[in-house]
Image 1 (cartoon, helix red, strand yellow):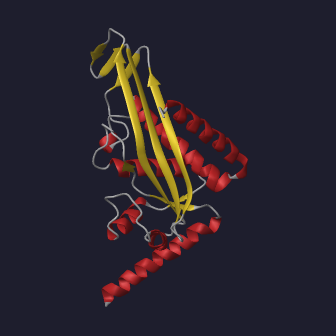
Image 2 (tube, one colour):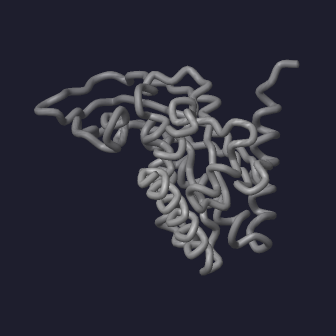
Image 3 (cartoon, rainbow, N blue to C red):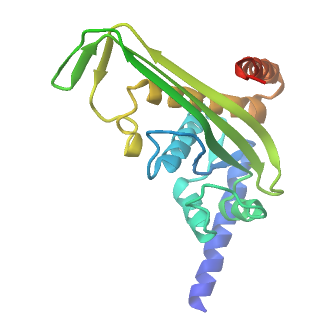
Length: 236
């Protein structure tokens, strides 16, 4: 009985904390681990969690959101057996919202990734520093969904993209970067494309969830350009 009372008190404390967090008017959000539906060479164990953490950091840096602590979110997801999948199953959104205090759950799925690397001749490597005529390009697309925790309905959805290119004389230092499975990618076009997409994601979420009217038209125009670009590449 003592354990049961402790659990009830713990949950009540979480609920109270969630209510107080929302009092300043900023949206309270929790970022769920990312999924992968693309052919990605750098995707390994823990990358989905790492990308969710990186997006959480981007959102926190903007100052427009309250972020649910990752440890608290992880505990709830593990309890509902969702941590491994990174998905929000039907009917679980409200439960996650009540237990974490989140008003919105943000999910991200890597749906496309492409990279190219070619040499232009020459190049040397000395003590971890490479100098050479390499040309590399990376592109990533991430499907974002924002789910209302109280209803489980999708409030916002958008595909964000990131592209990075290095050319001419490339300088790379073979040290860690992001940490975890992405530690070797920070200074590569792949890492830069990931960072660009996450920054775009954070700025889009700030626009539609906080700033609203002043910037939504700009993002509608961006989305239309993305669709036109994609449509031009299709062979129907």
